Image (tube, rainbow, N blue to C red):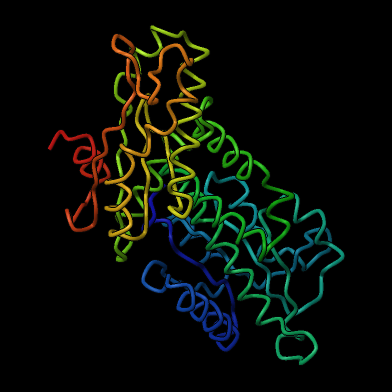
Length: 345
């Protein structure tokens, strides 16, 4: 999805004053949401100009002053724009700001075209009908919806889910008509969760690491490797091996209960992300020794000495912990963080 080339908003309005009113409302939303530099707002005074612009550019949102019904003579103006959008493959939403209340025609139009809302100009400044505020809310829903699609393309399902939920708060009809976005998010969630530990894996871990690249706050990430895990599986079998991984996952969750994130990106490797570098250092120092307290849950009693240590000849699980933090950066790619965490650099 091309973020810059597609981020345009088109206002189709033959009245320059109304075009200015609508543009002001849209610009306020862009400023409030920090998207002012990301979007270009363009203006067409009639259908022909609008079609020419649509032929040359992709738009996220089109605001039109039209009559919605083409069944009565003289009311078809603007339908060519909607027809163009319907036939195209672009992901463009429409809002209607009209001088007439054509609400009775809306139901069919909402289904046939990507129309989010209808606004009547007569109510724009009416104290009991704040249409201008409603336009702003609708524009916000489009911005959040677009953010959700962008983050889905990037594999950042956590941020996609946040943007999608915000979009649906502004425009509940999104959730009814476009359930596939929520389904994609849920699918990404399920695929990003490890079957054994129940922890985020794959895209879930990468999503969290991408957040670290964007933040200016201090952070620490512990890369915790379970040593001799494969030997343990060979000795005790897959059922006991999987049970051991679950025990280790619970151990890390208990020791780092305020960490905010624990992931399992690959077999035998856990990633613990903390928003406090000093706490991450302290946890790194204590994890290996504290882990030995779990031996009674990991080994049958006959394989343990009286003091709780593992008998000779038995594969002894242990934790190797590496700390990566913002102080090791700056980082420009999550692979740089992972390579340092794995000890390869």
